[in-house]
Every structure is written in structure tokens, then in C-alpha cells.
Length: 329
Length: 239
Image 1: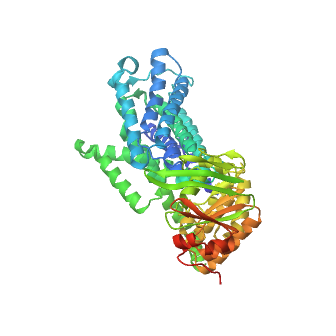
Image 2 (image 1 turned 45 degrees about the horizontal axis):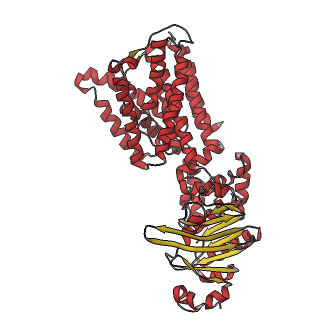
Image 3 (image 1 turned 180 degrees about the vertical axis):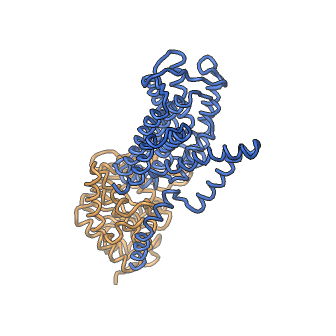
């Protein structure tokens, strides 16, 4: 239980927040923190646990966003059906990306994922009959759970909290299960993992497909929450970078890391946007520069992310003892 | 148990292994020696499924392994170690070994028990919780062996697990290999340290330029003029 203390506090606070306040801005912030944290967790399944760093996860996010929006607009179907369709499409896309991960290593794989998202962006912005092209799709609002038309922010908060919890548990599974250990082996050294009887290639592909499907589910929720799907946003590299950024800043390959990263980055973005545009309208893009600096500082000085920094704070005594023991032997 | 039928592996114009045949019976402890570049490790890579040979077959317990991927070969009971050790650097010694054990048992708890037993048996008990990348080379070699043992092989290919060890570590490793063998694991061992391999094995195979130039009991190999010429430089005597 102790190792989940951070998560219990975090999700617990989110759960009781509506009791304390009904302030729409504040609740919106919590929904977005949970949403981006959950989607970054989905990225973490591939980028962290399987070690397959992608900068094209917006592809899956966009597939999820569009699947629901298109089915609703053209055929009046429930976004829940769109959610399932988006996940199915993303699994197929994930299998393609996964196949590439077995052909391309390191930076070449990253480039392939970027290109993949770009191809979908161009498709979505040109296929006017289906996607309304570059104008994007306003998601029609229909009241009710089945139509994902939740008027109150509180309902959205609990829906995203459920989603976030599910993603947290998926990651915990990857830390304690047979598949998780085997995946760790593949991430550390694929040749050695194969020599020990692990079907490394297949395992990586499965992890990427899982990651893709979960990211897509996040895309559907986001589009229904925000109410608008813009191809230049949902398929953008900015978004792909955001997923990676949240995770790297929070702690790659840890279940809580993406959520910690999301708290910092989501809050920072809103805060900086508001303050900077108050100072001068021309400063609006400056928050991106601040992100960049933050990323450099984190990677240089705290490569394990916020969770590593917090963990070090809590366990420095235990570690010092271990070091001492190790030095003596 | 293992039969190589004139296995040939080429890299471009270079024949790394040329028509090598070899039979290993259950319970054997076979040594493979030869100068650098003789094709020893390439031969292991062919047997373990990392390279597909241009011609010839690898047969293990009556099953043709040629073209099977490494993980299937391991699951059939044939595991290899790597000359340049490949620990899972950021994981603990216990977790390293556990990943090997999980190939045989599905339950994580059972694999942990298995791993603890193997870690203890390989003399790594004091380091079970230590991160693998912080181990010195002698212990990394032992971890390489421990991890392979956790997959419960019937045939184990050891690629220079004694290289780089100090005399005390070397003696401990020889002892450990003997115990593994006594425990019923058939072994094929690549080694450069002649004193160790002469004492350890019952049969030695000598490779040179990818070809088998001699095979026999250690005492005869040590005096074989072709082997002396190609590898030993002078007759090797065990004092």
C-alpha cells in the first residue's frame, strides 16, 4: 500500500475537490490534469515501460478524437461506439508502428512515428467529405451519459478520474506482472531477453498497440469534453511532445510520474498563458520556451523526473545505508 | 543431444564457420578453444538462433533448430550466455534472474522463489538487491550464468564466463561450473584460459579460421602439433 501512497493522495484529492469548490476554472484544471496525466500514462506504456520512445502518439489521440466525432456527426452514433472504433483503428496503427520498431532503432524509429502522425494530419485536413477538412468538427452536444454529453464539470471530473485510475492500474500491472518483468528485460537488452526465452519483438508490438489503444481512448474523451476536433491540434507534434514531456518530467517508466508531470505542466501552461498575455499579447508563445528550458534542466539534473526527486527525498537515508553496505563488501 | 551437421556461416566473403560438425551427448562437458576470430562465438550464435547458417543443420534432441528464433530455442532447453555480458543494467540482480525464471513459471511469486534459490546457488546472495550495472565484472559474469540457469536449460552454452576473472574468482567459477554440470546440465564451454579448460572438460574441440582442426581429450589436444601451431604456440603442460 505504501508504494501507492502518492497515488491515493493524488486521486483522493481529485475525488473530494468538488466538495470543496464548484469553481469552474478550478474543476476544469483538475479534469485536464487527470486527462493529460492519463494520456501521458498511455504514452508511458510504450515510451517508458517498453522503451519505445514515440513522438507520434498524437496519431492515436487524433484517431480517437475523430472516430467519435465523425460517427456522431455523420451517423448519429454514440461516442462510446466511436471510442471502441478509435481504439480498434489505433491497435491496427499501433501494430504498424510496432512492426517499424523492430526494423528501426533509436532516432530512426522516432522519425518514423513523427511521419506517421503527419500523414494522418494531412489525411484529416484534406478528406473534406468525412472530416470537414481543416476547419475541424464541432462535436454536437447531446445530453446524457450514452451521448457523453455531460453538462456538469463534476461528472466530467469523475469520468476522467476513472480513466486516470484505470491507466494508473495498467502501469502498476506492468511493474508487477510477468509481462512487465519480461518487458523490462526487453527494454534493458533485447538480445539478452531473447536468450532467456522472451519473444522480445512480439512483446514490444503488444505494448505499443496497448499504448496506442489507450491513447486513442483519451483522444475520444478529450474531444467530447472540449467539443471541437481540429486536425492541426489533435494530430500535432506539439501534442505528441506534450505526452512525452509530462512523462519525462514526472518520471519515465513509473506509474505516478505522468500524473506528476501533468500537474506541473498543465498548471504551468494555464498560469503562464494567463500571466504572459496580461503582460503583453506578444508574449503568448513564451511558455513553450519555458517548457524547453524546464525539460533541459530536468533531464540534466533530475533524469528520474519529479518522482525520482521526491523518492530521493523520502528514501535518502535508506539509500545512504545501502551505499555504505555496498562499499564495505 | 546436440548435433551440428557441417554448419557454415559466411559474412560477405568471409567464412566465419566452415563446415563444422559436432556431436554433444547428454552429460558431456565440451570445451571449444581457438584463436581470436576462429569462429567460436559465431558458432554459438548459429546454435542459439541469432544467425541463420548458409548451410548445414543444428539438431537438438532430434529437433531441427535451424531458423528457429532464439527465444524458442531457449524454451526448448538450450540457453546461451554472452561473451560480452548483457546484464539488465538498471534492474536488481534478483530481478535479472527472475526474468530468466519467468520463462519456466508463469507466477511472479514462484519465479521470485526460483530466482532467490539460483542467486544463492551462484554465490550472489549478498548482492540480490544490488542494481546489476554496479556489479564488478567478476560478479557480472556470475550473474550472466545465474540468469541462464534460471531458464532451467538441459544444454548450456557458456561463452568465456571465466575471462577477466582474478585467480580467486576463477577458482570459484570453475567450482560453480562443475556443480552445474554435476546437477545434470550438459555444457559446451568457450574459453581462452587453458589451465581452466584443460582441468574442467573431458573433450576439447579446436577451431581455427572457422574450421574444426582437432577434437579429443585435453591431454591429446595439448600435444597435437596442429593445435600447438595454430593456437597454443607451445605444448601445454599441466603442472
